[in-house]
Image (cartoon, rainbow, N blue to C red; front, side, top):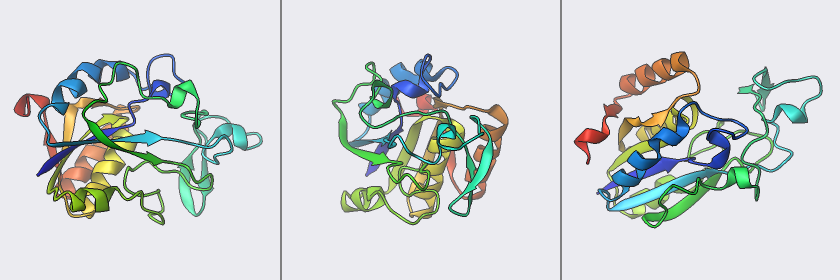
Length: 202
């Protein structure tokens, strides 16, 4: 069985959002079209408390995109985004949610960031996504959403490490930084991940 994982298609990652991904809204129609081709569709949702330590605003004399160590891990400091219960944390209204069977929220622990839909960045806590997919007898996962070089990449990487055959749908995602995205793709290929195009799935 195969599953589609839709990563963080939320208002704050779209044009006008607090952490907009260039061209983020361009993938909406494609993601909606992909959903009908999968027996199982799940989504992840960034869901940060206001005091999250990945926010630059919670560090004196720091600004967005500065880098610090947080919990022993390198951390990019972000603009406040996807704060629990705010419009920015909501899924984009054009995203078709009728096919989405389950939503996995992440980034709720204020002391550690969580790019992946499977684990926090220190792999200390699981969201339960791997167990859910295995319970549903999923063998292959296809990952899309935002942003390609962060949350989509880390979700795909953790899918591989959790034992799933993993496909990164290249044209159904957009990066924050092209160089970081190129590095992420090389890493996924080294881990035996697959780079796919939607034309092969529609």
